[in-house]
Length: 536
Image (tube, rainbow, N blue to C red; front, side, top):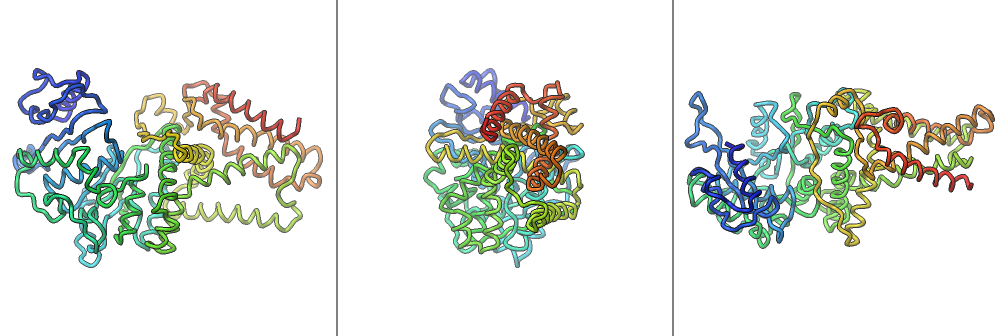
């Protein structure tokens, strides 16, 4: 039914008009609102089609089927706002007119249920009278299937989706991560003690729908509340529903709900409640992360900043928990400095760290081992593996020189009125060769992305500085080079982490290798930096 409807809708969009010979009687109601011409995928009326209705549809054994309604909100050049949050708000309003169920579940399109007991687990919290008055949502961790053994891109995001939410759960609850979350519908209409009256009675969270979902009156109202111009004057996205103002609408919505006085609950059963797909190419992951960084800076620098507004509403600890994510993009500054400055100084023979004989040398070693050791312990305690932890810390450095850096750049340019941002949907499409390389733990580059240039430059500069430093120790002796040992160790550490880059630039000839164009640009820029650092 869905595929048949999809073909008819795409035919209408392709031709720019609805032709009667391409629709049947059942589909006439879907296209009843399509009274204009020149439709495109970016400009078309609302589509609402009841595929299954619980009052009449039965399965093969005679059991009642659940309601299933396909919805595509109106697309218009004059009004395009909210991206995913706008679509979610449209669904909240449409579902209110058709069933108005008190509990709402949000899932990404690639997620599927992995445990039939999940709904019962969520309802246990919603039926608890002690926590219900202030509980907005029950968040399940986002867990992925199909990851290779080492999770080379760290798509698991164990800290974000599993470790940190448990700490936040001890305060006001975890942040909303965009999927695997059950909401109390009442939470979309103001704080626990500050109810906002929606513009029509049918959208009130306590309204009881008494008419069939396929009735003409219900469908008329559903089309009305789904229209682009409906929420423009009604406060949706600003005082009600999912919040606009950031590309990471999930983070922002969870944050704003908790600022209003709502709390969340983190439910982490042993069997994953939902499973989803993850990117299997590096560029898809970096693009996704760049969008996150861009959106997080939106929140950090807005009137609802986690450092000001959040501190007043949430308290010190919860405010810092949200700020930890909001400042993520800014970490590109120290990461970039550590990736280039000590190495360039090493090429010039300049010492910037303490000598081995200096007591401060031990402090640097202690801080390095302590920080990485603590992070490794957290990872292992949450049933992680050493190889996945190693790949996670390597990806953190790669993000710092790509997604974090370009996210900051995009945000800065957008703030100056130079619009470069957009909502980049992460590709989950796979082909056999690409999947095979991913399963073997081989990094996938393949495209000539500017985000590959800084990391390639860092790989080359660290390799050159490590080689020069190592030869210096061999030829001049450890005593004469003790002031440069920390810089040599740092370069060696980066070189070990950059092996996939060296492999992709030099040793591979498959479609996933580093594009020659990127390698040449990185080598050229690296040579300029080296000449500048060495003074010749």
